Length: 294
Image (cartoon, rainbow, N blue to C red):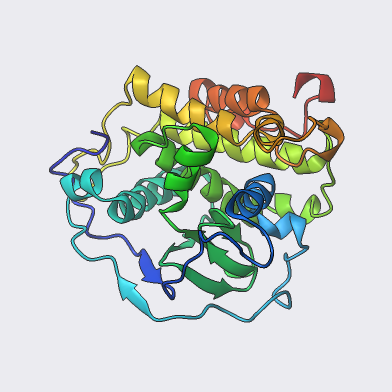
């Protein structure tokens, strides 16, 4: 259990949008599921840097599909029992954390994707993976992505691991607000690249929130979240490891090629998550350290 059962999470603003489709089928545009998932994980779904979509002119305008409220998401118990509600409830705690840590913070939108939906950064689905779209200032997540992560990359993808993924994407929103994404838009690839530094900073931001996750409270003063157990922390670290560039290249049957890395190795991703968890968001300036310390 991650959320306090009696916490009031009804104030979230998450919405569901999309058109149900067979995203995880055998042939998507000539690619099998594994190929598409590898592409999604190698980009991390963070299309802003990969496709150059940091301006409102990029991609299709806005989103498509009918938006509906996330129903039956009122309490922490609901969040513990339902993936959609867990993500919606997590957004409340993340917004509260960053509102206190970053002056001028404004909340991103959170869209729970049902099948697929169009965004200013392209199509969101479980094949592309969770991602943050800067022009929309929106995080898009299809919760069925976590099932694919379990099946293809041997990750547990439990409750806290799912919240780690959400917190990583919120980290990109913070980078957008502070100008990091704009400054390092052409981040490139390689183990010391700005692209990798951007992703490791988002991992560190996620760890910083997990380290403070019991401090955010509802209107009645009830903490949204319980302190994570060792097992939950291990699961979150496992998720960070599963989407390391080297691990993805190994699992897809390819040669590990550090020059192509866009997110960092499994070891780097786990270490920067741990740095944030132990030392907070102020320790997350991945752009200030030499490459040998990444």
